[in-house]
Image 1 (cartoon, rainbow, N blue to C red):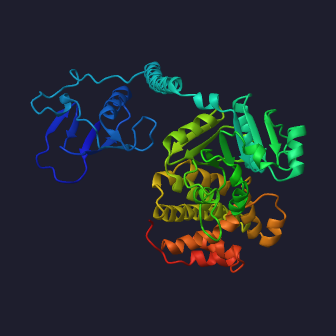
Image 2: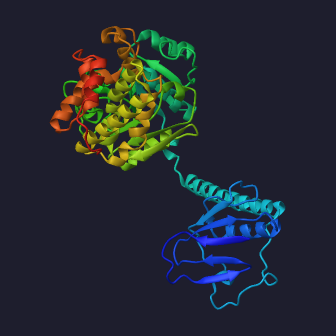
Image 3: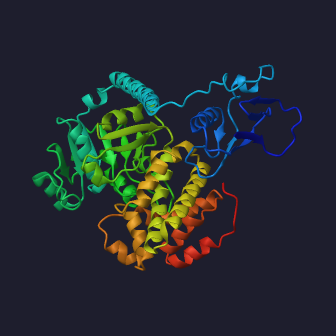
Length: 483
């Protein structure tokens, strides 16, 4: 015999119904039944009954004949049991009138599973096709007139990123003249004769339409766009020297990330002042991008920001390709400050790696650093959405977690016990985070923002705090609410 009994509790107002020797007690809320399997006879009918109940209740333990325990619990059914079990007006059922549904066989279950799988795949396929149609529609309307009418582009600086950007732009159109203004005569000769940057990319062939010069007048004359790739700390002096050759309407696209050490200025402030033209068209290009991967034509996404929307769109047209996605933004401050502060945070991430503090520490530190960047940047007028985009979190993730980052490498070596002077003297590239760290602290004081992690990096760079001591002090800060 199989009996269904309700667990202990109030039983007032509970409709009761008997069928085939089965007592069913129903409550008008969630129900919990205990089923006692007291007999092993009539296995088929018992299996049908258990299967029928399983269709109407959520079992905590789904009953089966192989279950060694004679108890199964059904609870929280989403729909009421069948009417023939609950209806108080229905006449009692006898064994001859009870028709329990037979369980589906394996082939039926397989057919249902296949049908559901086909439905799911169809939904995914339709969604993907809609996305492609939307993409084709926008591409058909995209303008290409900027690239078509651009004849000459100049890149100021012969470093790794300037070289990578020169190669990318040159690949966009074979008839485009790309001039690189460099100060190193050896690099200039290498680019012109071998189409190689012997200092930074000795094995990467540059396009034939990339040429180099040390003559500012020659490089800037007739240029339609100018990419500025000179390190921030040397930019003002460099630009003052070439200002006489710069057309007042020449758009400047800044590739440099950082803050000027003594003035705490960003490139959007440095360039117009150094060129003595407050109306000089200005665009900043930033985002998660290593020059080596650009040279290898790997998929990359960046953002261009300008207060002039038309100018941002023009640069987007100039740069966007099958290997490089370009988003636009009007938040120049947010893009620039995020690009500057992430270098300081990358040094901190490298220190954690150099001290072998583990993944938990790395995640905690970078999270705290992201918050500090957000606190300061928003105080300076940046949009919070910019800080969660490509130029914010995107660039932070790349710079903090990947060994190609030179700022991270500085941190790793600091955490391993090396002296900062020895590290910098052994590098052939500039780690902007070192000089930016001091400027960040000055800005934090100006805007009254507490930046524990970024301040600790500045203290380590100034040789006033050891990495180990810095970790100890940060871990002993007061426990606070997350903001």
